[in-house]
Length: 223
Length: 115
Image 1 (cartoon, rainbow over the protein chains, first blue to last red):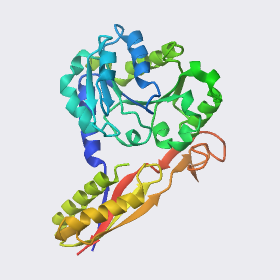
Image 2: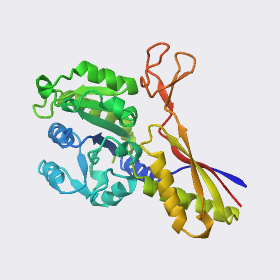
Image 3: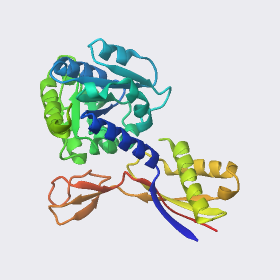
Image 4: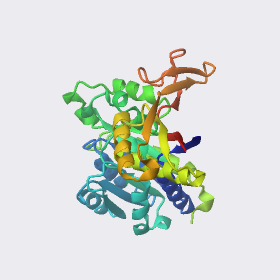
């Protein structure tokens, strides 16, 4: 006999992600899942983001890396509560890893939780963490062909940060062709050309985050 | 991606279902793999065969069939025109506007056969 099942293979992860999302909503926290290649500049962007938003809104951070606590130390130095997840070789965060980190953060004392995924454009695109927003960091030194090669990450994101625009003169990449490539997979995403090194364009990205924060979580449920 | 652990999830899923249905032997499992799901079908099939080979009676000798699900875009402005997204992305070939992704990222167990 044939039995119709029709079930998502990642249903356990998705169920955990729903629980995370319920916690975030209950504490009126907006969660951001930040995806990008190793070396795209995710942590430097977060440092810039924290420097600009800390004090205006209450921040928290989860850092995902295979090894080391370097990124958590960098964010922690800026006075933001941060938890480091070491995947010990795992190439992405999943909803369970995030759930295990949440008890170490006071969600009720924050408005925005920044989750930096493991550096990888492939697998993180498949794992819902319970976030409200996904953003991809793509540096110009990686080349303009990345959206065509890794469509799923770009397709599911609400924002793409084109990082290292201060390096454009050392590459053959044009920002317009990067934007065109992103648009092929995501006509709606907000796109921010940024240099996390000089701070160029970071204000626009942060303003977008603040605008999304205002609509993502109802003010009425904020403590 | 993580074909072995995904194959293990699939094995657990169909084993649980088969126990509920009173099925003693699973013969074939059909899964749907999206073109953009980052899952390698051959690795999934090999992993599943390895798991089925050591997991005892219920799954012993069970084969996996993979049905690929292409990445397909759909354009509302063109009356729901559907087109493959694997070449030019989600830009509608009709109006050059942006379309939505209809399928291509899924990974699901569709059905299994057994007795």
